[in-house]
Image 1 (tube, rainbow, N blue to C red):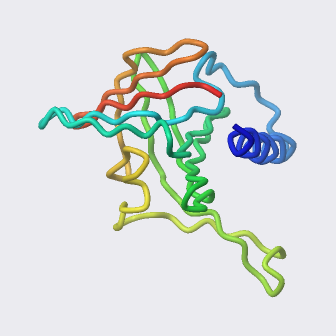
Image 2: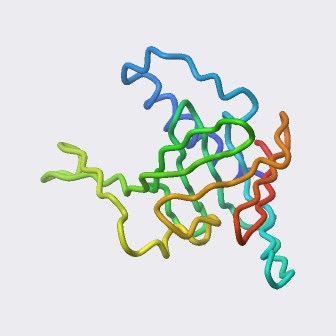
Amino acid sequence: MRRYLLIIGLMSLSFAILSSCGMAEVSDNGDLDGFWHLERVDTLNTGGVCLLDEDRRFWGIQYDLLNLRDADRKVDNLYMRFSHEKGVLRLYHPYVYKWGGEEGHERVNDWPIQDDFSNLAPFGIHQAEELFEIETLNHSKMVLKSSSLRLYFRKF
């Protein structure tokens, strides 16, 4: 439980920093905004089920930015833009957020992910643009369905 609280704290800090960087607009994402724990992935074609409730894979959603974070594998620098309309969540423009410069903190570079989407696959994303039907979305649960997967989340 303490490790989950640490992850939540780190994600909150990340979004607080992003929020303070001049985002004057207010999100109208409703229940979509927040920190979502990926707990299960169903493969639609085969009927396979992958239980991930013990893993620490998260989607952090705020405004129009999605942060993908895997605390077990120390992955926290994957981002995508998104939009949601009429029950569809569209993910696009995946990129890696990298520090640059001599000390590692002078300059920030965004590196688009264009060809190899293998680092996104553990999060249920397999291409530069993904469309998910929102099957369930409320204050505590989210279920998304793509052409090949169904993803189950619990809000933290």
